[in-house]
Amino acid sequence: MTRCGNTQRVQVAPACVATIGIRSPRRMNALLWVVVLLVVGLCVMVLEVFVPSGGILGFLSITAIVAAIATAFLEQGPTAGMTVLAVAVVAVPVVLSLAFRWFPETPLGRRVLPPPPIAAEMLPDASGRQHTREMVGRSGHTVIALLPWGSVDFDGEQLDAVSESGPIEAGVAVEAVGAQGRALIVRRSEAGQSFQATEPEKQKIATESNLSPTLESFEFDQLHRPSP
Image 1 (cartoon, rainbow, N blue to C red):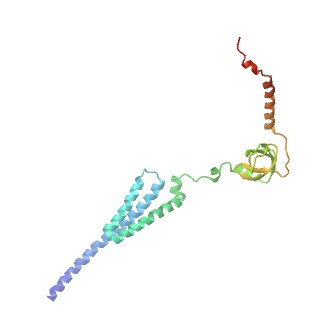
Image 2: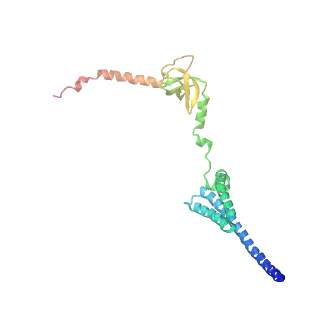
Image 3: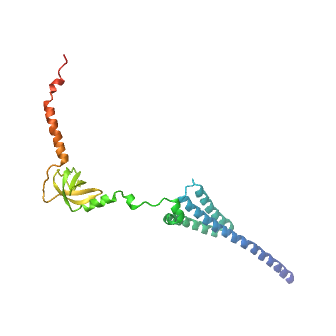
């Protein structure tokens, strides 16, 4: 009886070893497929963000990730499946954030994406804004009354301006205290110097004076006279 039992044990051992030898390569192949599917799914997801495909790449990416999780559950067991699921949940947002940050700097990203805008293009007429800021602290006079917006003259150059507080009449000395875009922020100068009427004001006065004699000489009574 003892010999028979030992014989059975000896016969069972090779069968167990053969079974383990067959299943180990299978488990290793399944694990390799899980890793490959997960990596491919993440890479295709990155391409979907930057390459317009009508959702095809996104569908393939999700399919590959789901296949990796399903393969881990079926071939490796629940523990491996939950591990791969957790890795996918963490890896997807991390990979997308890194793609948005680093992909535009890669050779492929420079081919696919348009070049970043230049700072000078994002702020048009930057030189004009800089010139306006350089006028801060200087003195000039108003050309058109500031109500509160108008025009001022600084060293023979007319600039848009806005009053710091309250309206300012034309021909009043002002000083620049700040800049708002291409417009100066001005206030009355402490000197309080006044200037003669500028050309726009002179033209306005001349036009009004030319209209006055015409209106005075026009006979309004003729408008109501009945025709004979």
